[in-house]
View 1 (cartoon, rainbow, N blue to C red):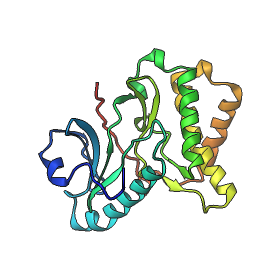
View 2 (view 1 turned 180 degrees about the vertical axis):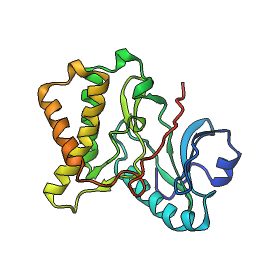
View 3 (view 1 turned 30 degrees about the vertical axis):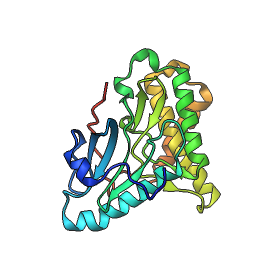
Length: 225
């Protein structure tokens, strides 16, 4: 899809049936799943926020996340077809699935987490880190039983970072994968990955980027069955 073309406009979005996935706080986007022309989209929308938030902070956050999603285009398990709806909203294809806490227990096995590990390595190979992989609400099991990762608002480009810093951030990302692996399928997590999880947890204490100004985000994503 060309970046100049738009699958839908704000007018179509407003008129479409939708489900609020996250209402958000004063400095967060309102996140809605909207069905437009038979296709489900996730829309992050700052239009209802204060003038200062939507015109300054909101535009900056949307620009960063859109750039990240477009950089990751084509990676299976990342929201696809990301585009800017208008100055105050971006959209990407909705990823049907459930958070790991709600996934069938038999899906949470070694094969699933190996695939999740590979997904993060693919993200890193494009020069990005997610930086919110420990939160299980950002990790999904799709209806096909494969892993997906959403919400790239905190993502950081690593291409211009010093290699030691880039590797540190990538290890923090992978530590989130191993944290969820340990939680949901501990018997299949080998000793080397357990040790890497412990190292990444110590490294994470050096990284202060935990949500807005150190405040953890609250998620309430509803699964689409």
